[in-house]
Image 1 (cartoon, rainbow, N blue to C red):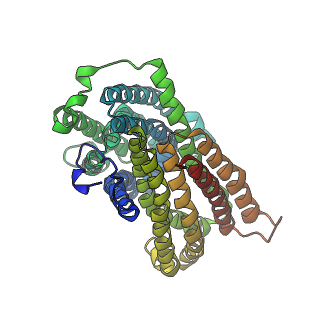
Image 2 (cartoon, rainbow, N blue to C red):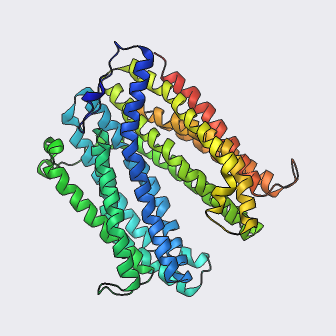
Image 3 (cartoon, helix red, strand yellow):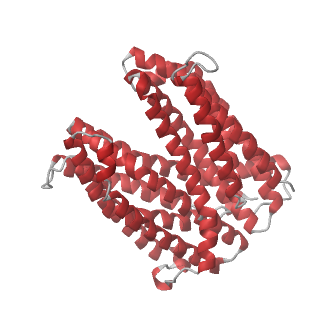
Amino acid sequence: MNPEIIDENHQPKADKKQPLIARVKLEWLVLARLGAPILVAQLAQMANGVIDVLMAGRYSAADLTGVAIGNSLWTPIFLFMLGVLNASQPIISSHKGAGEDHKILPVAWTAIYVGIFAAIVGFVALTNVGPLLGMLNMEAKPEAITVGYLNAFVWGLPALFLFIALRGLTDGLGNTKVFMVFSILTACVNAPLNYALIYGKFGAPELGGVGCGWATAIAQWVTVLMFLVYLNYAKAFKKYHLWQQRMLPKLSELKSFLALGVPIGFTIFVESTMFAVIALLLASFGSHIVAGHQIAINVVSVMFMVPLSLGMALTLRISFLMGSRDRESANLVARSSLILILIIAFIYAGILVPYAEFLAGLYSTEQEVIDVAVVLLGYGAMFQIADVIQVNGIAALRGFKDTKIPMYIMVSSFWGIGIPLGYILAKTDWIIPMMGAAGFWIGLIAGLTNAAFWLTLRLFRFSRA
């Protein structure tokens, strides 16, 4: 495989004439080239949430609370639909590998229609959160800000889900840089709009936290419209003119799409809600425990972006090779990626153990909070190893279009092992004296280790030559 044939439009075919070590190195290079833009895009998307929280927090505590609650309500919907829509990436990558370009646009349009449906459902759900907020017993002002923020934010949902749907086309064709550029653009548009609409600058109305919702909605529309213009005129996508070749989805294609995507979406949803539940269960231990836990989770979450991005690249690469009927190269990538991901995990463990106090100190100046975070980051070193193995396994299996059994493995690992064991260790004396937050981290490690074992076992079954 010659690296010079890697361009912006496609992935390379594998060159089986090269020695094994050379092939592995070049496959790792392909994963890095696919994954690096994905990583930057992920960080740019995270930046939008950070910008909202920072700017709303500087306006007032009530606005920060309102925006944070609003974010916590729309994020699960987004993550579920993100997983569902991500089904288009391996499907399109597989068609590209098979040279079946005529099958690519129908998949892209199926994703668009699924995104439109998701936007309608999200609009209805997020504009009717009053009863749910009433159950939270929020103060009147933050509650009003949450409602106002969501009522503004929902107008950007069609653009947001269209953006994610179109990503399936660009990423699926191997051009991951496109989504990266437009993700950065979203953050660049969102930041000044936030400033203007929160604080009433540049002639804009002063809306406080509600302005975050309008800023995000406007930024999403600006980005997706520019994305559509790019896709229409860019040389690399000339044959994929969406609007000139509009089509309705076929029932068979929709079923295949959802059969692959729904398990992905549900897996992501289950994982994200698990962390939210742990945070709620820790609330009774006091603010310094919760703060230390959140710091540790944030540190490992930022580190997780690298293996997550490589995992998404792995899905694309295996899908492409399977589409090109090169099962042997797909198997090689699947197995060799485990070595690459373990190297990253051990580097992370080597950072977390000696530098835990330094990392915690970046988030807090309170020694009591730092002490809690340092202890949890010690567990985080073990957490990382199990986590990167499971994300590698599940990403590779998605490339083989195996998503249903991995979903069952993840659900049983998180909710059958992780949460119950964590609760027993953290909040009871049934096995050993109550451990507090550390108990939940041990539960997470146990759940992730179980998931890593079974996913890797299943992966080696799929990657048998």
